[in-house]
Every structure is written in C-alpha cells, then in structure tokens.
Image (tube, rainbow, N blue to C red; front, side):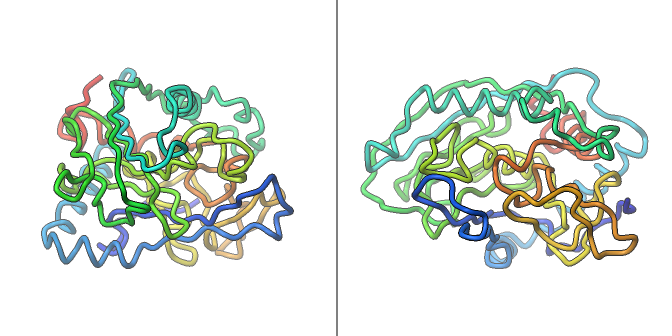
Length: 316
C-alpha cells in the first residue's frame, strides 16, 4: 500500500483514454490490441490554453487530502443528473433510448456495488471494496445531426460553433457527449478544475452502454464508469508512471497499466511485489475484467462533493 502524496502538474490534466477496437465476436486475448492513452498531447494542450490550470488542480488536491485526513466527506447519497448529448451522422451513431438507459443502469450498478461481478472481488481486496454511493439519473437527451465522420479529442463536440453541442448547466449536470471520436479512442474526461465550457465526459458511440458483441471487449459500459471516475478526480491506478501513485492509500502500487483479463493473482514488480488490483475500474483491463472501486477512491470522489469541493454544487 502506498502513501498518498501530491503528483506534479503533469498528472493533473484532462485524460483521453484510448482503446483499440474489435469489429468481431470475442477473440483470444493475444489478438486484442491493447488500450493506450494520449495523455501528453492533451496535457500540453490544456497547459498551453489555460496557464492557471495547474494551480487550480493543485488546490483541489490540497483540499481533497485535507478532507480525507479530517474524514470530512459526504454523509448521504450524491445524485448526479446526466445530460446525454448525441452527435450522429449514421443511424448506428444515433443510439437508442434503450442503449442510453442501459448505460445509466450500469453506472448505478458499478457505483453502488450492485454489479453482478462485484462478488468476484478477491478475498485480499474484499475489505477495501467500496460501495461508492453515487446515483445517476437521466435528465435529458439532446440529439444533433452532423456531417462529421469523427471529432477527435480537442472538445469540438462540446462547442456549438464547431458543430457540437454546448454543455447544459455543467455545474449541476454531468454532460455526456456520445459521438465517433476517431483514432481508436473510446472516451475521455475532464478533471475537476477545468473550464465549465468543456466540463464532462466523451464516449464513442460504439461503446456506450451494452453495445453488443461486435464491440467486445469494450461492450459492457465500463468505459463510462472509468471516464466518470476521472471526472470525479480519480487517477489511473498505476499513476501514469512506472510504479507511480494514484493518490489513493488502499490500492496496490502497479508497474503500469494492465490489459485484457489478467490471471489472478497478478504480482507487481514494484517494491514489496504486491498483488495488483487489476479488477479496479481505473486500470486498463477489458470491460469484463474490471468490477470494483476501493474505499480510498470512494473518499477521493466524495471529497469533491462536500462544501467547498470542486463539484459541491451537485449537493446531496
């Protein structure tokens, strides 16, 4: 277990999490292209566009550390209204109401330890497996036709002037953009502290909700669970560095990202050679290989919703 400390500004940025896709039914793990993350490009863009971003992120980290140390966290259930913004060129991109609802259902299961695979948490991690206690409610769906074949990761889908859809009341709604991102990227999120004009999460339309075997192994809605974890101030479990820190005390130190569905137990080569928590939502395993948050991650998420927190306007 690692000690919580402040990361340098290089880890306090918008994550754009990239995963390559399969267009067929489940294939052997060796045939599956690994996930990757275009973090450096996004970091450079954010720091260039907003020189104050690092200071705001560090302030949020200081607040979070203090809230956790004082056990000053949410006492009750947080309810997150979700506005789904759909940008579509094809019928397939104009995803159905049923598929949207399936994603809301998945989020409610995953963030409340009601997912059917929660019982698969290994005994070594059972004491820290968390019921985060956050509920998601579909507030509205906004649909807009487009001629664009892909949107990239520079937030064009969030801007009316670029053909996208501006966020709806982002201080009190989680805005979720659904579109074809391109480049094999499944989704990306904005951390607390970023601009309200771009606040929210983007998911490629192929990977929202229960999307069918053609999108295996990312067809169970866990891309949104992972990205919303970032939106709630969680880092990747390996800290985006070899044996790095995710600022959480009860997650083991990981060598780096894990892929596919690693055989348990999977040992780290970092100090102490801990068993890695490969089934954590903030790793890079397949959708059917991730099924838990930890209590430490729950505390980080909780801290942003308390009075003075970065997302306190959501209330309880």
